[in-house]
Structures are given as structure tokens and as C-alpha cells.
Length: 259
Image (cartoon, rainbow, N blue to C red; front, side, top):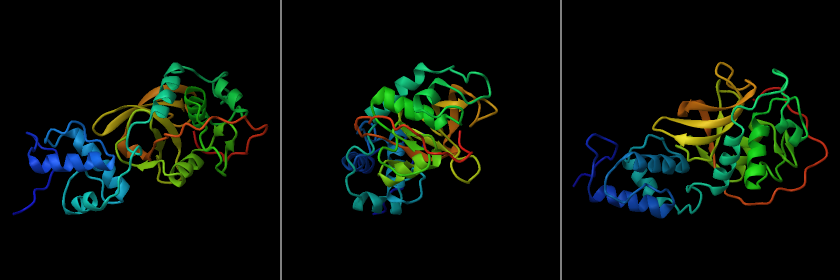
């Protein structure tokens, strides 16, 4: 008997084979939505997360390679569930939508004052602020890298490296609200960072610092932006509830790029 390839269709595929995949995804820590035997968008997103974790092609389709990954994957409790830490950071980020640099074009903000390094590109400083003040978590705590201080991190490539090194990296799989989005516009080092707010099929919205329409990664304002999944290196999810330490007296110098 042949095994069906499962993907989102209209009408939705349904049956016992879909339900078995949903149950396996749930057991592995990749919530597929209701266990209803229907292969809908929520189940597809869970499959994409599994594929990202397994290092195979991320297409949301359950074929032979994905079935093998389902059979051999180890449970990943917590790693694929939404982060309460991230959601608290998101609440803090929303408070500041519309905040701009003073004066315009100066990179000088209340977030830079808080961080102890004002007048530099501040998108990562804003994310550090939101996680610290909103959720009590220090981005890059204990991690050696450019832009790291006792308050968090000011340099996007370092934050991505930290997410990867500490098992918080989700890759390009569809995110959840509160996840950290790492943007890459040109294929080089990552350029910009934000906090995911809402998630669609192929796009998402995020709250970002130092952005503007037409100046994505150096626009001078906290804004809600709509982004494509194609814009990102990937996403990170922070579950740690580690308490924020006391700030260091001096910040590490930064390379010139990064929002």
C-alpha cells in the first residue's frame, strides 16, 4: 500500500495518516494545532519547524524524507512552544511604537541612554531593552562577542551567533509572537533585528527599532513592519528566565553596520 504525500490542499487532506503525523509532531514538541486529522496550515507550520530542526528542506510537505525525520527525531520539549519571555518583551516593544531619535538622524534615543552606548545604530539595543525591561532577560548574557555589555547586545551578528550557540535558533521555520527575527537583505552578515508580533502564511509583522519605510535598517523610529519570511536568516526563541545582571560600566566598540 502506497503512503500518501501530505501537503496543504483545497479541500484539506484528512484521515488517519494525517492524525498520526499530528500526534507525532505534538509528541516531539512541534504543536500542530488541533489533533483533528486535517492537514491544514497549523500542521504545515509544525512540519516546517520539524524540518528546520532536522536540517532538511523546509517545504511543509510530508514526503519520505520528512517521514524519516518524524520517525527518528528526539522530543524537543519547550523549544518549539511559544515563549512567555518573548511575549513579555513584545508587550514592552509595543509601548514604544512611534518613538524616534532626538534629534532626527542622530541615532540618539532613550534606549541608547539606557544601554550606555548612545548615538550608534540601535535596532539590537532596542531588542535588548525590551527583553531586559519587559522580561528580565539579558540578550547574549555571558557570551563573548562584539557589542556585548552587561545590558545586552548592540550588534546583530553577535546576537545571531548567540542564538545559534545556545540552542535558541529556529532557523527560517515559521515563527511565533515574541520570537526574535534576524534580517538579512543582501546575503552577507545579518543587517537588522526585530520582535515578531503576528504571523501569516508567508509573512509576519514585527516591532523593530531604527527602521522606516524606505530605510529598513537605519530609519530612526520604532515601527510595526510587515516582513516576508524570505527577508530573514531565521528566528530565535528565548525561554530562559535568567535575571538581568548589573550593567557594565563600558561598552564594547561596534563595527559600523547593523541597524
